[in-house]
Image (cartoon, rainbow, N blue to C red; front, top):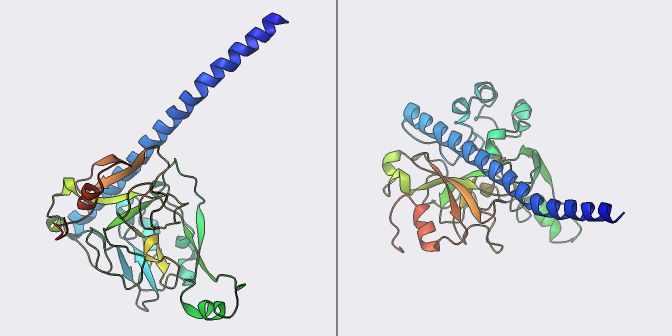
Length: 283
């Protein structure tokens, strides 16, 4: 009996020692896979630039200007998704039934395996706009209006050091991906290797998507792009900021296509510089 108790104690001790190691090993594998995903996105960016002589815009409006299509839509042919690309007509409102299949398509390449995500999320109407906001002025029990279901992503393009989710039309961002305008590599005055173009964000911070948004949606622009405001994984950060479930920081894609892990304790001034295409008067 004593021998059995000793054996069980030893097994318990070994399990207590091994489980954290196994957990760390799994996270290392997930982080490597996340890095690989971002590298593929970077390769698609460069192939798009080679073919079109420019990067995709951060988002572009449909003909009715009721919705916006995200930067990942023009990348689909370069992400080995030509069939999906053929299903999307960016002239149509995103709510058009002909886009139902595309709106329900999750892209594994745009997801970090370390994050806890649902394949889809519901975009609700901005509570400060539309009929719901008028009703809310008279009742505290008004339910939010669901606009559409959208596929989740973890990777959002860099809008810069300016908050993107204040309004649409948005202010002019100082990063690589802005509203209705395409940047070229020649615009990267700091150099491609010194400019962040895509980073991670957890679903818990704000659910994001690759395809696009209704402009009536809550935090519409923040669903497509991000901003470097308060730092990485900052609990007081705005929805636009970057975050991940990797311990200590997040993965970022740079203009030249390389991916690196930027730590939470990065100097904020340097982080802001990396997020801008050119020298700011405040730097």
